[in-house]
Length: 364
Image 1 (cartoon, rainbow, N blue to C red):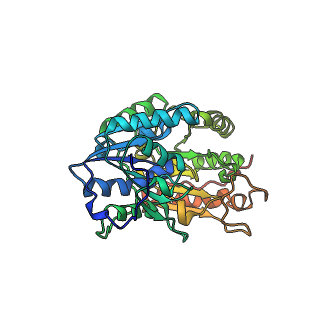
Image 2 (cartoon, rainbow, N blue to C red):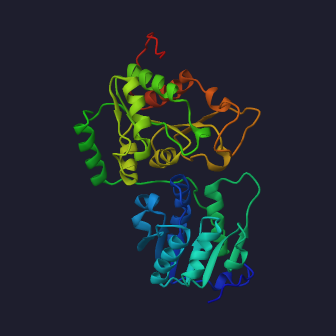
Image 3 (cartoon, rainbow, N blue to C red):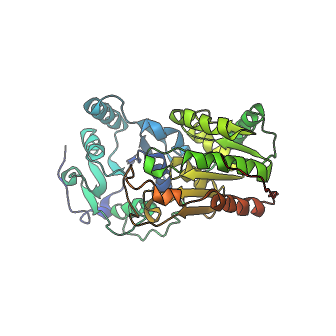
């Protein structure tokens, strides 16, 4: 097994993969941002057998039309997971692997899985595990562009690609979601406004009290339904908002798979979300999406799309990458409910949905 790195430019033109393994990113938002690169790979190698390697948490979002097969990373402890993943990789008989994550373990699994040609970024001390590498860009490069740059390791043709991700729903999926919505009491044609209040990091969560006020205001201004979306772990968070918002608010958290979330977004009027995976799915579905940005840098990881509005505040500590905040979430608390309502109003009016005036106080 060849585990020694080579000069990335020495043999790039000789790489003609017959079996290509694509190690996808581990997080929902990152996977969505990688889709333009996967689409470009399929165009570059229309006859190559392409296998996706995905973390179980994102496997529902892997675009089936772009891959011939899909395997998941092994579960268990770190070493157990590594060996399980390596065995699954070996079963694909892949001759080339393009590795999106920057982690040492993702490159090591591909080496242990017997993939002779391994491509990725020079990061996390894994230089000797890769045959062809790119240095990490230290500029404010958007992650979609970062992933697309990996294609320079496979071809010296200039790849002029649209790096705005797109997710397609299916007629079957939309029909299933319509049935679910009717069962949940949402008549077909009624405005449906989705809120995604969760995030792995507390520094990326707009205060719960403001989501409650927003849910009340949206119901009064549109006469529509407000759906709270999130993972099963966020069911209690969304349930708290629903119970305190009252009216026609629904707790959909944990009831919709990632693939069906695309269909749900397609059928929705607008999505308001923290900086999380749902924001990227909504943006890629083409639905008007308002993203409330706290920690992080929207120039690097902000959702892309023609109908995306990013609302953020630059404060003395911006941008930061911390998962917790020592400054009372100044960047997020500076975003008002009224400001978000105005973004949603514009999205509603652009779809000829009535926005009703309301003088009623929406305070808690």
